[in-house]
Image 1: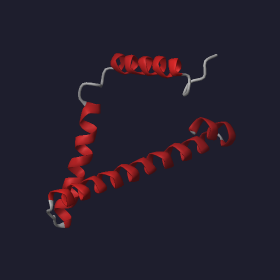
Image 2: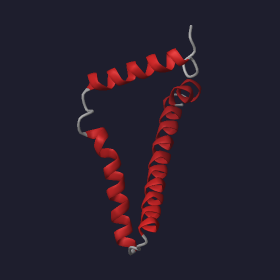
Image 3: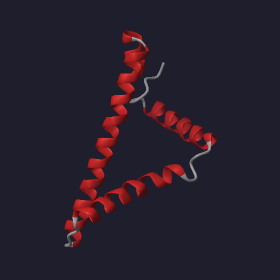
Image 4: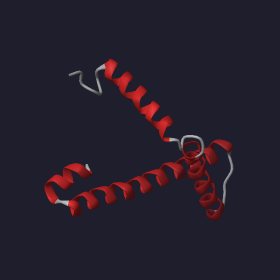
Length: 99
């Protein structure tokens, strides 16, 4: 989206599009974590006070980001995953059109 906005509105449009996308991701991930904590508490049949609910939500967000920050930090590893994803989706033909 930022590239399209930059083409039409310049660097300010690129920044605005990417910034608002980043903010929306923060809100979305927080909402998903709050929902996960709420469903887990309902499933376990327990309740927490608001401070502990906040701590459980922060822990859930931290737990979700841990696999992406520890071993996957090497660029070659990401490039290998991306290359395999492109090969798989290219072979399926529904995400990347064949030339």
